[in-house]
Figure 1 (tube, helix red, strand yellow):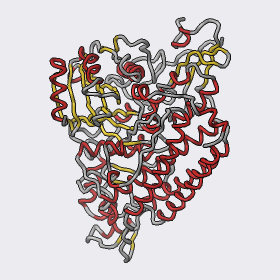
Figure 2 (tube, chains in turn yellow, green):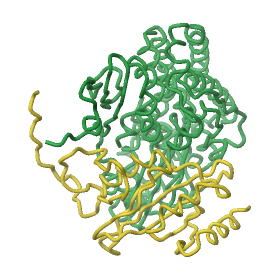
Figure 3 (cartoon, chains in turn purple, blue):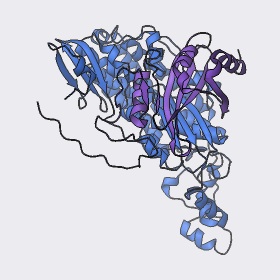
Figure 4 (tube, chains in turn red, cyan):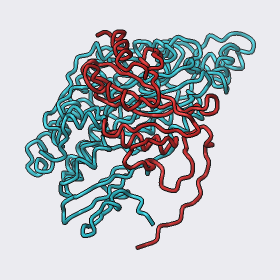
Length: 161
Length: 443
């Protein structure tokens, strides 16, 4: 299966979940519906597509212009040696998507980071807490509405036990 | 109050909770490992990261494409040149820049020097924490020789900012061949000594063989890449899978392990360093000697500016010593030919109106480097694994979003699983073999 055929095969396999297929500077991009994230990625992980590695998960804030956050997943298939970028938009008002915990083990930390930085909830995540900042941090720093260099309130010292 | 950590919520009342870190000599950088112990046995573990979070990605959104390069030095601070490379190659991919051959070779040279120093640092710390202090000293000595080569050319040991969009900042130092030959010789000697000290050492073997074992399936599921993934027997290396620069023309092997334990992670790194030294020799042979700068009178910049008010000056200009290697004659072979992709030659800035204008156009807000609208992902093989940059550009002078795929983020996320059920002492070599780098993990 060449790269073109592969994308076609994915498209026909995922059916209506696929909204668009694009090529961005040579990277294959698949835009899918947000409610199809978990079944679509679960299907891509298995044969015949065999995207065994969840390389990365991040989010981009398009809230101001388009009222949405874009979740960006990067998959990699060892057997085919190809990468695939998958994008899904969630509304900026109440951003939420299904978790990938259970499919990939690194999803737990990746989703905690996105939750921490963007406030996107991952439904079904067993332990959705902040990862890089601390409990009691106000706001989600990578949102465009969060000013650069904003100071956080001081948190009280923990009582000595 | 509801406990904030998972381990506190789940802990059995009779077991002991112990914090390892965030300030613990073995937690390189800062990482907090919370342990639930029954005697010396670890029943449960939880890692807390973020102590070194500096808002790298947020900062990048507020810096121009050119300015944010210095922040990439501070990600993996043991091999900053590879981070520079990952970032600039992503931007070059978006801009479609063709980098001159000489600059590509220099980039490979710098990448491999960084990789060896990264592996040396990791193994040195791992060995020291297992009680082999001699190994630490030997490896740090070798690293100094490697950093000499880097320092001669870039002027810095760690915060190099040397690999720039479009090429490299300056040509290699005139003495680079000698210092590189010394570094290779000394590193080979150290690798031989360290092999002799550790490979058959029963204390070291006891703490690494069969400890921290990860299966292939789990390594993939955790998104491992780099030497840690290869220690499980999967030969994935970005340099082979998606060759960049001139790696497809160079001969090297990808060493793999079998068991995926601490020892294999050690042994894969040791063998990779040999391959990197091999690459260094090949690439050094491919880099031609720089042509000597033209002879003739040299004038001071102030004098050049004064003269160029009336006529065009033809004399060479004495540049400041920190611009050594970026003379106009050299720069042409080191940076992409595209206009305004890299800092214009200083000689032009000093002596011609057009040069001055392009200098301002390059640095002015809203001008300079502006990749086209869109998003791109590009990755290079770093010391720890796949260093990937995902960049979204809206066509302005700064990135709309810049995300780093940090290899050790994925590796450290598996630590909890690897130490669960083991003894407390196993945390140290297991964590050491992962090569956690705080700057890259926490960003």
